[in-house]
Each structure stands twice: as structure tokens, then as C-alpha cells.
Image (cartoon, rainbow, N blue to C red; front, side, top):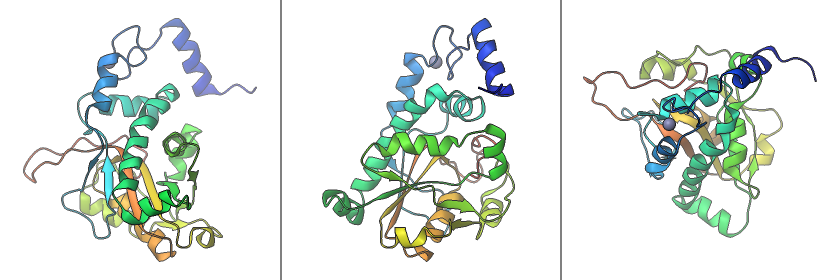
Length: 249
Ligand SMILES: [Zn+2]
């Protein structure tokens, strides 16, 4: 197997000085029971950003992106803590279940054993290349389970600026028209109810843009599910915690 500089160096360092809990740093835990508990504390709940971008799909999410949650998500996404994929995937799976149950069209498809597509929100190609993996797609596979197909059909049509640090309006402009379906997949998804999944929803610009692309391609209804959601704050409150750099939203 070829030497993978970043990954293998991290593995070596891990042998010398094992990392602590991804959430709180406590030694001797990859993810301590307290942090694991906090990830599952807030069950799936319907979530809408404020302000809500046009076309934002009905969305279910797990915990608020605060407390230990940002540290866990950043460790998973940016520090190659792939051991956290099953933990975060389980949180996302519950959100997907609620999103399916909350939409009559999706619920009927599940009951009839008709196809329902799970689509990872697209990542900027540069960030995927830099990481050497597609974290959200890995998460989608865990969340979809064995009975549902993960269809990585959503792609960015152009380079978008890193969403971190952009305002809601800037994020919407940054992403406007930036998502499309991979050529040849629109036919396979025609009329199929879709669930878009992502790690963190902040302004909703990414999910709204994914939903627009799917609707224009003639899919069935679109709902969405995310692991976590940035907490609502009033316009005068301090800025919400931003999700890790590199992801579109
Ligand atoms: Zn912890």
C-alpha cells in the first residue's frame, strides 16, 4: 500500500500519543460517554433557518451545532477521525427516518417498498481532493442503511467560495445555480422521492440549492436531513458558530 502522507503520519502520531475524546479531549476515550450522550440528546426535530431561503426543503436535524458538537464534527471531517462516521451516521440515520416519516410521499414510497434516493450534498471538489475522501458520502452510506440507495448525483457545477465566514445572503449568492445532477442520472431519479443529507445546516443555502436542482430534474418530492443545525439566534445576537471550513454549508 502506498504511503499516504497525512493519514499515515496521523496514524503514527496516534500510536505515540493517542488522541483524547473528539468532543472534550478527555484522555482514554475516542468519544467519551458524556459527549456521545450529548450527540444523541436532541432527537430529530424539524428545522428551518431564519431567514429561510426560497425552496428550502422540509428538513430534520439532530443536535444544535454548539457545545461539544462542533469539536466532534470538525475532528471527523477535518482531522480524519473516520472512527466517528458510525456515531454521526447513526444520528443522521434517525434524522433521515424522521424526514421520511414526516412526508406523506416519502412515507408511502417506503411502505410500498418503492425507491427512495438518499443524496449526499455536494462538497467542493478541492476540499474532497484535499481530504482524499468524501466524508458526507461516507455518512450517507451509514445513514441510508442496507435498504436504501445512496445516489451521489449532486455535483457542483463551478467552483464556489468556502462558505465559512459568509453571511446568509452571500452564501445564497455563492451557491445560486451551482448544483446540478450528474449527466445521465436525471432519468433514473425521475419521480423518485429524494432525501438530501448533509453534516451541518447553517443558512440552508446548500439544501435549498440541492432541492432546486432535483426539482428541475423532475425527481419526486425533496426532503432533507442533517446531523446538526446551527442554533437560531436573533439578528442582533452574535454570529452563529460556523460549520467546518471546506464544506459548502
Ligand atoms: Zn468527551
